[in-house]
Structures are given as C-alpha cells and as structure tokens.
Image (cartoon, rainbow, N blue to C red; front, side, top):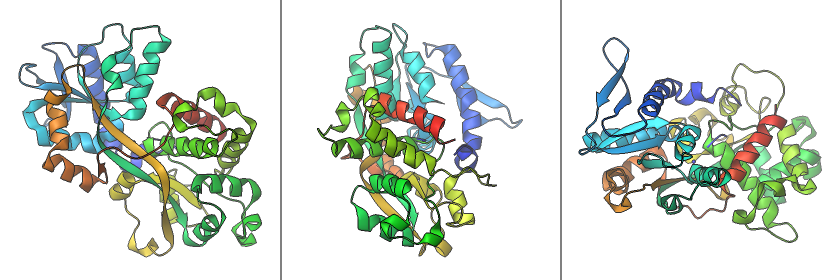
Length: 359
C-alpha cells in the first residue's frame, strides 16, 4: 500500500512528508479530543505551518497514513470542511491506538497497519477494538516487477511465481537460468522498506509464494513470523537480499538508478501502480523496461472507524464518483484487491530482516 534503498522520500514526497510530520506532532499533542487544534499540511505567507481550529460537530476527525499522502491530499481537497485531516506515520497511529481507551477518529490507511494495530493491542493485553476488525476497502494498488526486457525473458522462461524466480536466479546466477555471462551477478533492490508500502508488500508476496509451494503448503494468512526462520525460506530471502548492490551510487532510489544508469546499475525492482503514475517510465526507456505483474500482490487501502462507518464523510467521498476518479488518476484501482499477503505483523518482520540483510 508500503517500503518497503533509502532516499525514496526525496524523490517522491519529501516536501510533503516534512510538513505533515509537523502536522502529526500537533495532532498527537492534542490527542484528537474535542476542541483540539489540528495542524494542516499547508503554510502561511511567511512559510510557517498554518493551524486551523476545528469544530468537531461539523467536521469528521480523520487520520490518514502518510504513505498515502497523495490520496490524503485529494481527500482533504475533495471533502473540504467536512473532514478535519491529519497525516501521520502508521507507527504513530498504532501507538495512539495502543492506549487502553484511544480517542475516536476515522483512519484511512492500509490493511497492513490495521493488522499491526490489532496485534499491538493484543501484545499489550489490551481489549480488542472490534471496529479494527471491520475495515472497509476503498482502493488498491497492484505491484509490478520492473525489469530489463532481456532479463524478463529469462525470468518468464523459468516459472510463474515471478519473485521466486528472481530469488532462485539470484542464488544460481543468470547463466544457470539461460542468461548471458556478460550480465554478471543478479542485481535486485527495493525502495526503503520503512517508507515504501510496495516494498513491504513485495517481501510479503515473496513469502506467500514460497510457503504456498512448501510441503505442507501454508496460506498467506497462516504464515507467522516464526515460519520465516525456515531454512528454505531463509535461503531464498537471503539470496535476494544478497543481490542488492553494495557499491555507492549518486541515486539511492533503485528505480532512478535503472532510469539514469541502466542495467549496469540495477536489473530489477518492485513498484506499485501508484509509484508508476507519480514517475512513469520515460519514452526513451519504454522499449527496454518491462512491467511484469506480481500475482495476488497489492497495497490495500481501507477505512476503519469506531463510529458508524456508513456515516463516515471520508469514506463517502472516497467511494464517490469524484473520489474513485481521483484514485484512478493516482494509480489506484477501485475496491478490494484479490491478493494473498501475510498479516501486517509478518510484513513488519520481513521488513526488519530485509533492512538487516540487504545493507
């Protein structure tokens, strides 16, 4: 929705994130109570953050995941004064929801973070928040593997589970799979797993594909963090992590390296359809770079609220014709995805492992 290769924020939304971090800090201090002052991610004429007092009787308090900042900005503009919007990190909202009686607000986020919030409360022996178990899906962003065309042919010739192919070829090398010796070792990288939901979902798709083919097979929803310790999965995961180039580049964003340097810098990365709308493959590279769909893998966007979800103005706008058209323009697809990914807690565990092994 998620990673997911530091420096991504500077390429996509560094300015917005810097502003909304201030907004999130003010929202946290106010604790989203009646009469709170919510900071909006806008600046006054002097360049200082502008704050707006909100009337809770007129506006729905909405917390939006910072990784969905383009959708959140569109929601703020489209819903106008009907919603009081704050943008903050998933970790900050999870911490807010991990108090015994959290303040009430509507949460626009990815299903990954909804899982993490529920798991955090369980880990602290706090009562479950039933409304977290009833997310209303609004959109999803499918994942694609970006790969050079000649390498894509080798991947396609070897198997259908594209990320397993990438991991296995990373372990054995291109020549063993029918590629050219001149290509050298396999080079794969992901955007920062801390800021890219696509990268975290990609790691989840790798785990789902691996355990679906295991003996006995595991459904994605049944994968636990301890399953990630299995030698077979650790080998595949490690092979892909070892394929991350260790040399320094001017561009820390993997996709930017592919565009500016070419296959000598990087051969494969994973993006979402939203990423590709924000920065599409330029015409000069369109014949050289291939987008291969990653089956049953997407960033899922949902809305949860402790009040009647049907009354949510945010949800109504996101499901309106205007909201759906805006989401499509941003690269999302309407409704829930037909995907199979592990829980948010497992995605977090995968991201932690990736950060430790790939650098």
